[in-house]
Amino acid sequence: MISLNIEKTLGFISKENVFAYEAQVKAAQEALENGTGKGNDFLGWLHLPSSITKEHLADLKATAQVLRENCEVVIVAGIGGSYLGARAVIEALSNSFTWLQDKKSGPVILYAGHNIGEDYLYELTEYLKDKKFGVINISKSGTTTETALAFRLLKKQCEDQRGKDMAKKVIVAVTDAKKGAARVTADNEGYKSFIIPDNVGGRFSVLTPVGLLPIAVAGFDIEKLVAGAAAMEKTCGKDVPFAENPAAIYAATRNELYKNGKKIEILVNFNPKLHYVSEWWKQLYGESEGKENKGIFPASVDFSTDLHSMGQWIQEGERTIYETVISVEKTQYSLQVPSDEANLDGLNFLAGKHVDEVNKMAELGTQLAHVDGGVPNMRIVIPVLNEESIGGLLYFFEKACGISGYLLGVNPFNQPGVEAYKKNMFALLNKPGYEEESKAIQARL
Ligand SMILES: O=P(O)(O)OC[C@H]1O[C@](O)(CO)[C@@H](O)[C@@H]1O
Image (cartoon, rainbow, N blue to C red; front, top):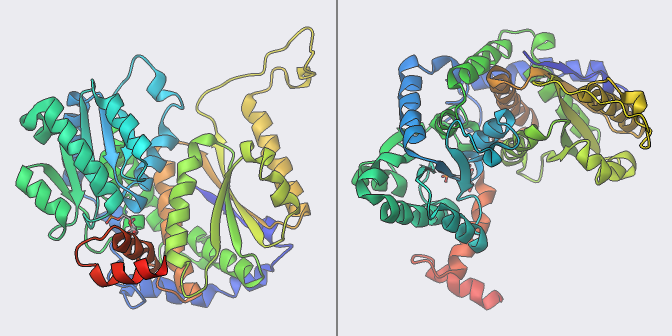
């Protein structure tokens, strides 16, 4: 299980003030449970882990197996919440060099539909030319331009290369139950499809087929992932006392820091495999809280890599930041620093030590330095990178996000601001139905 330590924020804010949120947190928890708060039609994630059935998981695993058996490469097409959760878990659990290994235990997972890069898509389609590939097309709305565009290319290529019958087998749709273009295509073409429940928004959907199917295709244990999340659902439950509920403490602490001028939260890891967990977290908190001219700006760094780039800013820049460090207690493998007779690099003082001992001292040294430099520091410890702990971590962040958004007073479950760029892009591209907007935007150029 994970543990949260806020000790190193307490020189900047008081424990008393954090605990003063207890009643507000309780009200937020009740609003979530009773569906009486803002955005209450998007609360399907709240008890999702404990409600996932064995049959559903078996269905997902069976489909994943079809893709694993028939594909060397599987493209996960999606963007935002329809992409980041799967990638976060897959990268956290995968060998860092998995695509370079000759003996692969399953298909290589690649991603598309999360950008509009012509070169990216050209290079991808070129690479796929001699590959047996499949596609998981993930879009709740089915109208997201980035994903629809990539899928149009990949669908055609898959059908041309592998034939219509095989394409039907290796293209899977994950979309909403009724509406949207992706549903119509899936039904017309006879693709296997999975439903994203109406009441689960994209950024809270990692434990729906949006995340679970790609994660299963990548060869990871989705039962354990869900079990980890379900355990965390209990740990963060509404009847757990404030002081013992990590989601409550995290939500209260970050709101208190924000009130005290700490406008930017930097999510820190000391393990490169967690890079995409941070990307997922940024969408979760950014889209949930950044509205009504309010909200902590969620940023992230990978340490110790970024200590050699952003470290200077964090140590001595504007004091509007705080850090939340995700620390992984144990490594999976063991590697010791060798001794060297000549010792030209002067590293013999480390000989015999595990690389992770060095990493942990980098972590501790950084924490102390940043706190000395005026940066409050929270620490989340997970025991090891595995399915259970990642499942728990994701649910912990989701639950804390729901509470935190209510503490801030916003609707954490909508994202009206995202439409502004889409409207302009469609107007600039003369999308039918946007005639007025096209005229207006042309006049501005
Ligand atoms: O699953 P969809 O509908 O393609 O949406 C993908 C992403 O786009 C957004 O709607 C923003 O445009 C996100 O909230 C969402 O996660």
